[in-house]
Image 1 (cartoon, rainbow, N blue to C red):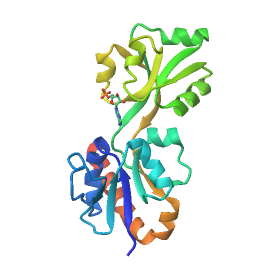
Image 2 (cartoon, rainbow, N blue to C red; image 1 turned 30 degrees about the vertical axis):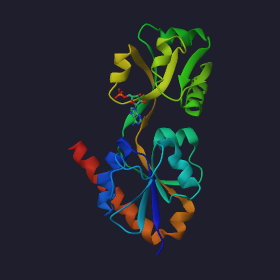
Image 3 (cartoon, helix red, strand yellow; image 1 turned 90 degrees about the vertical axis):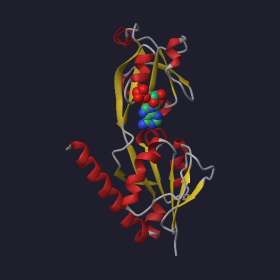
Image 4 (spheres, helix red, strand yellow; image 1 turned 90 degrees about the horizontal axis):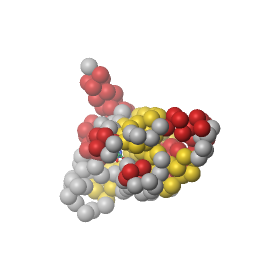
Length: 221
Ligand code: AMP
């Protein structure tokens, strides 16, 4: 019997995906927050979960090491989604990708003067495209975490980062100045797997899609 491997990351994506997978009869037999195992069996013997870094999910799926994956639009846009079929917006792990600056920094004035802005981010490609489309000259500084610190210590004029509640920005006297995109988690599928394992994958997609549409309906009600 053919097998299905689903790649996803721990934390918010795993927690919010669990009820959707459950609608397809898939329940992890161990809690990834507690287990050190990287391959988790599920209540369906032909389905395994692999727990990877969020930014590695597209790579596992692109190379076919996982048939399906769940990744944020931030990661997919930054890395490009060549070779990945992207059938479902799961509507979970929602946030926004924003440009933010110190509260005392006049962003509009800096932009209208046409000088170069220093921007810290881990989303170099997305930030480059965004500022190029606006005709804003930027020097990009790659960081791997805690982007919010960069403007506070003079490393950058602005950051490009994900914002959910806005609490982290407020706590650090930063403010949002531009929205780059709205982000939610997407289900991605390896294109060869979709052809070769269609009989297994299609029912999964419709169960997961149905559950996410019901959740969205409840959230809107
Ligand atoms: P918040 O304080 O709720 O606005 O969250 C902001 C912090 O959480 C930032 O450091 C973001 O990088 C991170 N963050 C917010 N939403 C997400 C998400 N969907 N996925 C990963 N990180 C996120």
